[in-house]
Image (cartoon, rainbow, N blue to C red; front, side):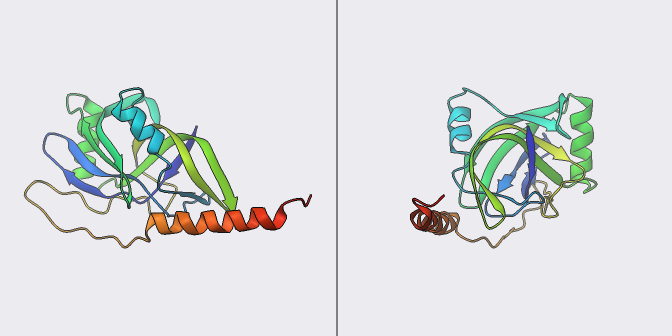
Length: 188
């Protein structure tokens, strides 16, 4: 299993332990030179919605420390959006909630296996990911893998993030890839 940290935005942290935010953000190069593209989680989201498989919500990628459940998951232009709930009856989940609420921790990471990817200019572009788990972590490997904001129901601020259109990037990458294939066809 590999781990990928990316820029995470917690949109809301409610008193009942509910967290809304992004588990992965598209078109960001992580510390391992991996870039997740829009559509990489399509199968995972489909399987989640059909209740075939559901990624686990863990503390620090530790499979022995589940801290909650992921209730909703979908891709949008920005990344993989999730709604999850910390199970506050579990002592570790209660601790994680307090740490998040007070800004003592602010990192998230996903555990996954790569189904499909390609390399271009020293970067690996992840196009199909088997999502196994989403973790709250203390030290994300990517400097952008931080929680930007933790809000209560009373604190509603607008959070904006500039992103390049994922579909534009994917189209450009496909065009470059096809051009390279045409130029190298028949050469060994």
